[in-house]
Length: 166
Image (cartoon, rainbow, N blue to C red; front, side, top):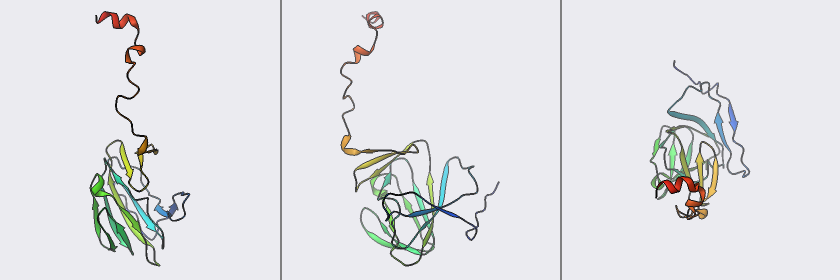
């Protein structure tokens, strides 16, 4: 079944943010039938930033600017994007991105992304990671060695099982 979203009938909802500079509005979709492709129509109001500067480890993302313009931050530069522009973000640090609406008019864009299970979103400015879709956020400074806390593995097993292997 085709899903048609009429831009002049779309209602937007604000994503809650404790920081006023992050005030992204997301259009309420008419369908929830998507399985492997996720999308949102977003509106970034004047003087606001999209999500914090980030990249995905297991998701590619594509923006299509529907109206207005904004400044795009990438790992190597800042540049204006305009209505009709299509911007692809690869997985990993080279795909890091953030938008800022430097104009007086809203910037509307389609945010299309791949979804294949869990994703890890990393925020280079704040040193955090976010496990998606669960929204579990951690500081990367808490990273530990793979074997930390595992030295007493035999203590977790019944002696009767361990004796069989001897």
